[in-house]
Image (cartoon, rainbow, N blue to C red):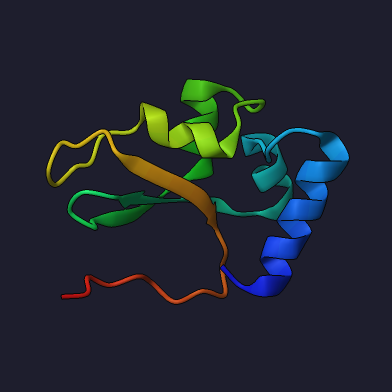
Length: 93
């Protein structure tokens, strides 16, 4: 994540006292980026899908706890906003 985006998200979280929610991402026009910590598979999940299942007030960092990797079946998934300027992540190694 870029330093400017990280600082912006940190300011938003500190101001609200809570992590960013799916509603916050909707306001910014972002989807959710998911990364499997086991096999490194990654994908961008459309925000509309997540809001429909979890609700707009659901915290973004907790989305990963509800995800299952489509490649290896692991439940060890990290999530963050899918910032539009960042290049796709590829498998390393």
